[in-house]
Image 1 (cartoon, rainbow, N blue to C red):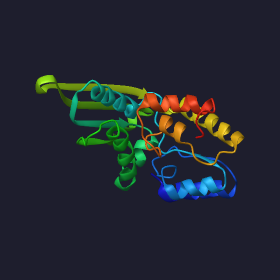
Image 2 (cartoon, helix red, strand yellow; image 1 turned 135 degrees about the horizontal axis):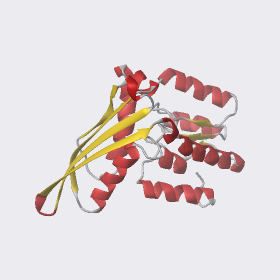
Image 3 (cartoon, helix red, strand yellow; image 1 turned 30 degrees about the horizontal axis):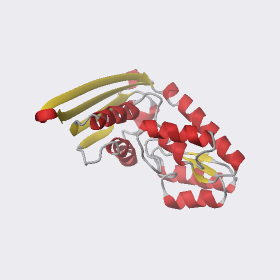
Image 4 (cartoon, rainbow, N blue to C red; image 1 turned 60 degrees about the vertical axis):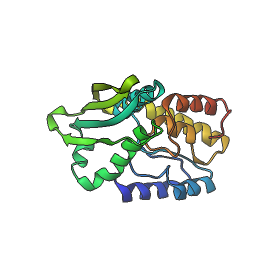
Amino acid sequence: GSENASRWYAQQALEANCAFVNCIPVFIASDKEWQEKFKEKRLPLAGDDVMSQIGATVLHKTIVKLLVDRGVIVDESYQLNVGGDTDFLNMLEKERLKSKEISKTSAVQAMTPYKVPLKIGPSDYIPFLKNKKICYIWIKGRYFGNTPVYIDVKLDVWDAPNSAGVVIDVIRSIKIALDRGIGGPLISISAFAFKHPPIQVPYHIAKQWVEDFIQGKRER
């Protein structure tokens, strides 16, 4: 991610008394120091690293959580992504990949009560794909009697519109928080809409949190 630029932008939002939504993999909403800064000024904060409406991370999380809930031991898994937009072009610079890999990996790892060997991250930039993103997910596990199971998934999406609806929901939640005078990290919408939120929970729980937040049953 663009570490310095993102933190500078967050600081400008504070000084302008503006709420802040962080859609890229720089850790701001999940950082306690930034959380306190926005809380002190009663400004809502949401992030980090937007999770697409139907993207690699939410699909990978959902499959792993299903396996765990069904008593399947997940032994190892990888997720490889290629694309042709500027996001993938930027990530050819390896120093930009660290926070992205942490963000995507932690989202999937949080779905299991035990440590799983994972390799998750952007793999390459393919210019002629343009805004298309292709993801390959592979999972190895064991069910009753140590019987092996393997899952192979390919996901093919247009990247740009895949986050648009999600971000609109985040902006709506930010507006609710502003109207209610709530500052600091919005735990519910962040868990629902981002890969590296302040608190990681399974998708169905995050969805219920958002419903409860909208109805005023949860503060944030």
